[in-house]
Image 1: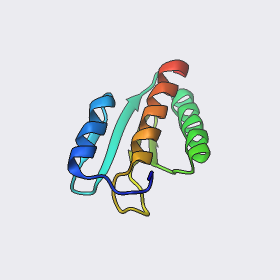
Image 2: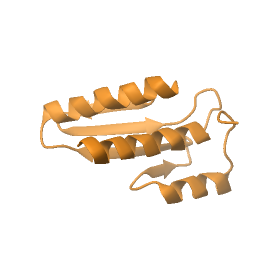
Image 3: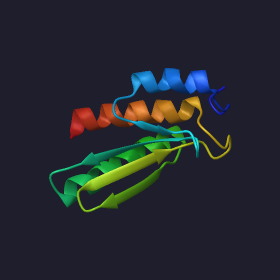
Length: 100
């Protein structure tokens, strides 16, 4: 099930398919940072991610500081990482690669 908390082996397997995401085992999350050419592009990326998140009913922690965007994923209901986190991370990477 998508909301079941992943074990260490499953997390390691999920990390192998992600590019430049970091895993923080102390708070059971994954995160990534992007830098864009300008502020408007960074905000446009956040808007696109919010659309992906809404479609997947999975809402990340997102911060923006000028041209830098940081996204942190974990599943609140599971109090840790689930397949939903890795699915959204992959969707975000694909969207950024295609549109930015």
